[in-house]
Length: 114
Image (cartoon, rainbow, N blue to C red):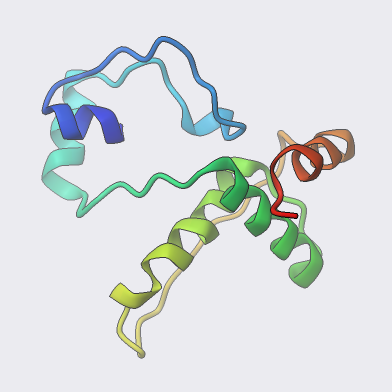
């Protein structure tokens, strides 16, 4: 979506390389792009390392194991925190159906800042 918005047209991605697989789609439809351009203020892309850091933070603090796509919401909110008013209410939706313990161990090994 971020690339399509930047290009002003649907873009076909050659591959989905992020660990946040459920956020990746090879392309967006023209209709979806039109709605995104109309209703979204921005699309924030975070690197896998930030998604994993957020995933670990959520697991350690909230005792909820999310999938990387869900932890991207926290990573993006953290990047954008300067844009929120002090009285803003920010809602993040977490889900975790696509992550197992082995996945988590691999993500931490491969992407977490050392």
